[in-house]
Image 1 (tube, helix red, strand yellow):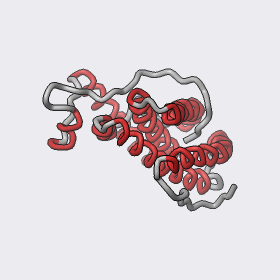
Image 2 (cartoon, one colour):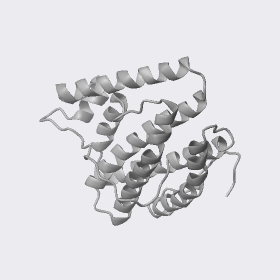
Image 3 (cartoon, rainbow, N blue to C red):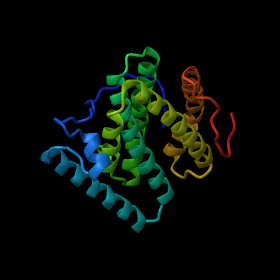
Image 4 (tube, rainbow, N blue to C red):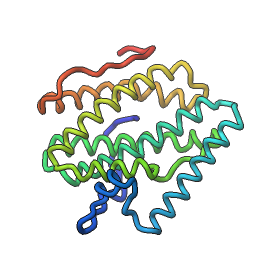
Length: 218
């Protein structure tokens, strides 16, 4: 997802805790979340809307590949923002805070760009991460701060490798002109921020470069 510095505001998604039985414990042990009834109902409704959006896209094959790209990238942005907000709240490390802020702001800009493209394509976008993604994020939020920071860095390395590959490969495949411009403009910032993630990760003993595959180069 597009990573650039830009002020972004949003409700923080924090791990929900209960006496004796934390959200992470319930998720990992029983596969259930401690979300209250109202948020759970809203989540269920949003998941249903998204399932319908995929089915609708499949029924209309025109620019289906563009629609799937938008749906997957937008959903991934929501998920990565949610995790980054938990990390931002938990850490006292300035470098990790800066990275988490970059993830939140960069994905917000990417989503802002994708929304009118999605509207043009007739794609209904999600409003929040899926229930299973939120459950996994809640579980990660139960990690001690040091472990959460390492988890976040490893995930950012993987996500940047994924996005570099996807955006490089999709540049020649995109049909929608706005989407093609967005994909083209995103490739260089993705590499810049991947290098930033790698530098911070290397200081904490996470070695090695990113392994990416794609049609494009630097």
